[in-house]
Image 1 (cartoon, rainbow, N blue to C red):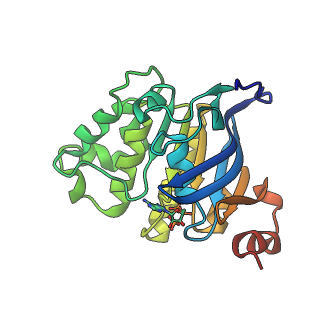
Image 2: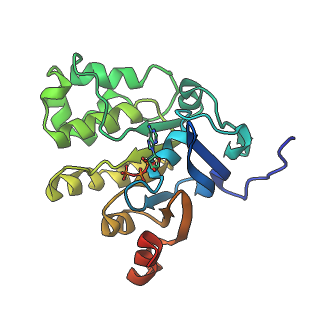
Length: 241
Ligand code: ATP
């Protein structure tokens, strides 16, 4: 069956009836999700709601139907992760996954292997996160948690993505560090890049995004403009109460 799904104007990424499973266990049940060009979208939801699974499905880390994930209206579901990075989607994975035996700069350079053209390079990253320039020759895992998160974001930016997906980048970090990291967001989106953030802290999610999706048990329970969703709407969508 061929798709005749036309992307709405300005839509960069779309999932359509996305289903995902781990073996016999289904984790996503028909998720419809959209990100417009230049938009920052937050995904919230309780533990196990399916937030990471959504990002893994988009980035080729889980087998999904080709036409369940569309980039510019073209099916990309189930392509290998490197093919998806090459098309301009980069993931900052939960837990950062830095290469412990490599320096900060070597980790960053690895992100640029696709050779996609664009504004991001080492000089630009070091201007965004000056501490990384200072620590460029240190083993990445000798850095603080917040600095390691900057390396993980930088590595993803080095692939010059059109869409940056960030999985719980604030997890385990002090509020002042979380603020420092999210303060970098306007410099990233300033180039017209789209960003999806999975975030446990609902207030942070609302503050940094234009639109919020809430997932509950593998389905979208709420979607709307970040600024106008009420606390009641969110807690109902989050907990189902
Ligand atoms: P968290 O905030 O805890 O990371 P999440 O919203 O990101 O939660 P997912 O990690 O996407 O949730 O998990 C969705 C569902 O899939 C859960 O029921 C979870 O137990 C299950 N799941 C996640 N990873 C695996 C896996 N590797 N194998 C089997 N089931 C998994």
